[in-house]
Amino acid sequence: MKNDAKQRAAAASAKVRGTRSFSRFKDRLNEMGATLVETEWLGARTKHRVVCSEGHECTPLPNNVISGFGPCKICAGTSPDVSEKKFRERLGELGAVLVEDDWKGRHTPHRVICSEGHECTPTPGNVLMGGGLCRECAWKWDVFYVVASPDVVKFGVTTGDPRPRLNVHSRDGLTERVFVATGLPEGVALEVEGELKKLLSLSGVRPVRGHEYFPAAVRNMVVATAKGMVSVNRWDDTRHGEG
Image 1 (cartoon, rainbow, N blue to C red):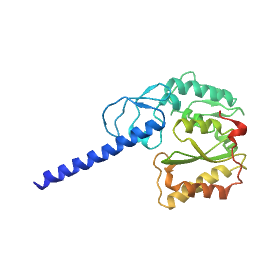
Image 2 (cartoon, rainbow, N blue to C red):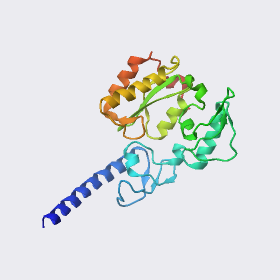
Image 3 (cartoon, rainbow, N blue to C red):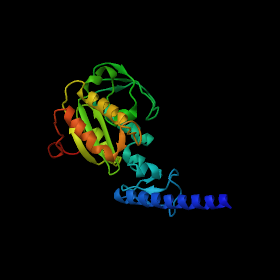
Image 4 (cartoon, rainbow, N blue to C red):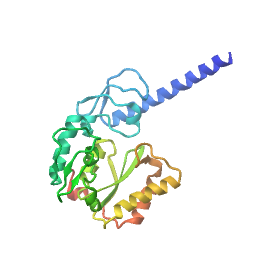
């Protein structure tokens, strides 16, 4: 009898959690102009059919969407064909040459010769998010940024023009550009990033995903710390426009 009661209580609790998650998932899709095809909740870790704001059919996981990810791999540039095309385009913009003949996947290192003639093996996914190609040229990272969605704050570094990386984050749902410092002296951007990770770890704050995606609750601490460590040079969207 007691076990039956516990099972009924657990089932009722799971149903309530599912209803709340389904509501948050639908609200998040509505914010991004996406349409849910499924008529019922399949579970937070089960793919749901969705049509994104650009009309692409996709199957995101509700947990990812609720956490701030966009629903569509094509829009995010993470589908294989789109990733390869954008990777080659980005290498061209950076004056680099792809040595590989075949596409090996977004998360697999590819042999590249950077604009300085160094042989390197960057990961396409990292490059498409604004990461550098070459370890020997890594000191050129001179931009630190903070972007956010309603639920997540993310910080990181990039080099030169920050728009490629910021636009990737925007397509992924992190549309608010909270703080961007450009033209930083050698090593400063990486130092700020490292110190923030250390501070959050010591404060007991864990990433909600990856290594630099944190709960929105720490946003003010992240921005205040970053501003205290760099000379502020905000990216002016009205001057530079959207990429």
